[in-house]
Image (cartoon, rainbow, N blue to C red; front, side, top):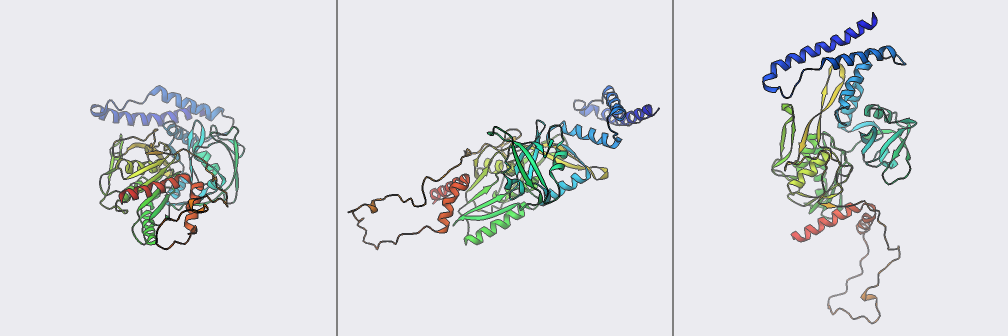
Length: 438
C-alpha cells in the first residue's frame, strides 16, 4: 500500500507537470511547434519507478527531498559543465564570491571528465601560494576520490574553517606522477584590481577577477597611476592571466574604459531577455595610448570578453597563450526556499561576431611558457672598446660623462626578465610602439 501511494504521489506530481506543459504546448503550437514537444509519458513512468526502487531498496534511507534535489541537479549537470543547482548555502557563497570575500582555497574550478579542473588560482590566495596552476586536474581531496562527485560537492569539501588543512592530489601535464599539494584554508579576500608603474610613463594593471565593482576600481587605479607618473601614461599592460572571469557587466565596464565607441559584446539565446548588446561610451581613460593585454590558458569568460573586444577594435595587442574558451553566459535564477538554478542561457560574441565557446582567444603574439635564467654572473662585465689599452678617444669636445650606476628601477627591470618574462616582453613592445609613434 505504501509503495502504491508513493508511486502514485510522484506520478501524480509529474502528470500535473505534463498536463500544464502540454496545455502550453497546445496554446503555442501554431508559433513554436518546432521548438517544443509533449513530455514523454513512458519516460516519466520510468522515472517514478526508479524513484520508488531507490526509496525501497537503497542500502541507506534517503528522503524524498534528497532524491528530488539529486534529480534536479542531474538534469542541470547533464546539460553542460556550468549549469548547476545551488542550495541555499551554495547560493549565498556565490553571492559572496561576486562581492570579493569568501572562505576556502582560492581557486576557480570546473568539471572535466569527472574530475575537478582548475580554471585558475586567484591572486594572493592559499592555492596560488601552494603552487596550484591553471589546467591542474584534482583527482583526490584528502583521501576522497573526486570521480563521481558533483562540482558542488567537491567545492563544499574544499571549503572549510580558516587554518584547517587539505591535501589535493593533482594530475599535471608534463608530470609523470600525481602531485600532492597541502593547502591551509583561509578567508579569501580578493582585491580585484592592482596597479603599479613598471617604469616612468608605463603602467601595469592586474585584474584577478571581475566583480561588481571592478570597473570602478579600474578607473581609480588609473587615476593613481597617472598621479604617480605626474601625467598621462605612454602605455599600459593589462594583465588578465589566470583570471577566471566573473560578472558580465564588470567585463563591459573594463572594456568601455578603453574604448570610445562601438560594440563591446553581444549575447544570443533562446529566450527574449538573453539577447543583449553592450556599446562603449565616448570616454577612453588612456586617451588612445597603446595597450598590451596579457592572457593565458587560465583567462576565461569575462577576461575573454575584454580581450576579444579590445582585439576586434584594434585597441590593444593581445599577447601570451590561447585563452580558456568559455563563451557562454550563466543566469542565476532564484527559486522558492532560498535555492537557485545556475543555467546557461546564452552564448556571447565579440564585436566582429566571433564565438569564443570552446575556441578561446588567439593572441596576436604567441608566448610559450619558458623558464629563463641569466647567463651573466654577479661580477660579469662585458669588455668594450673603452676598456682596451691605447684606445682612441671619440673626438667629442664635451666633458666626459660620469659612469652611470644601475638605479633601483634598472635592477627591477633586469629581474623582470627572469621573474615574469611575458610582462617584460609586453613592456618592451609598449616602448617600441612609443618610439615609432614619436
